[in-house]
Image (tube, rainbow, N blue to C red; front, side):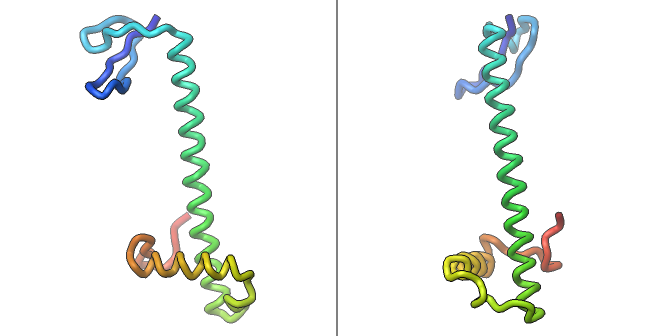
Length: 107
């Protein structure tokens, strides 16, 4: 048996193996294990997504470098890719995806 502290919204904010003044709601160990496994899977998904987004940014910067050096032209890429790159450049320019001052992302 474990004991949890629950905030006003019903979120678990602390877990203790003993009943304390703060952690005073009993939770079955199996239920706690399921909750913890779910959180770990969610964190793994978040970490994976963050990695994917960093890689997308790196690929955008790579394409920019290749275009700037005239290795490829933007028009060499398929039309859907051109549209996505153009949209991302527009979002960066507007500030929602602003490029860091040094130009490239740090990996």
